[in-house]
Image 1: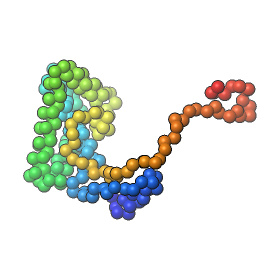
Image 2: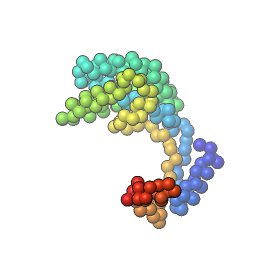
Image 3: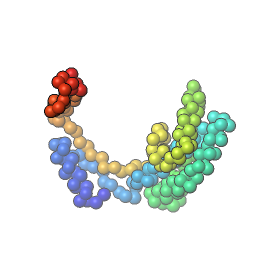
Image 4: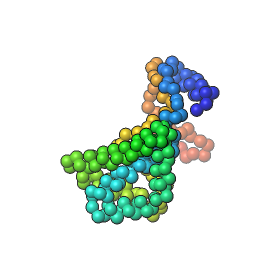
Length: 197
């Protein structure tokens, strides 16, 4: 974000909140993920969950996983390349490769841990079936849009570095709940026929 835009955002927050800003963390583009990179991490997390389902839930999930991989092959490869590039950009080539591998290994291990909690295997497999059904619907969704709606428990390995401002709205009163009011009678309305009594 340019300095002028950042200053404008701060000024706007001051006007609306009437509060003083706490110091925001400096933004370093080298250590922050873009929206596309965060989406790639989300895609990978969902893919790892579905991989674990294919490994543990049965033949049906294996077939569904194979269809998922085939249907989204191009998008999955592109997303994976974005994520690898992100790790290399943030950590350098060798450390980036290691961080990439570690994230994928950790994500599938955590999926397995969640699945093997006593009493959770059936729920895990049912949830995977729901995700497969939505992903493999006749109207093929855009992968990034689809996974954005899939809840992921895995912690992101990167920060998006959104501007985070320590602001409180102390002293600002919240308006009472809005209640509907009757529409005023208009010329030509029959008497006492308003929508609300």
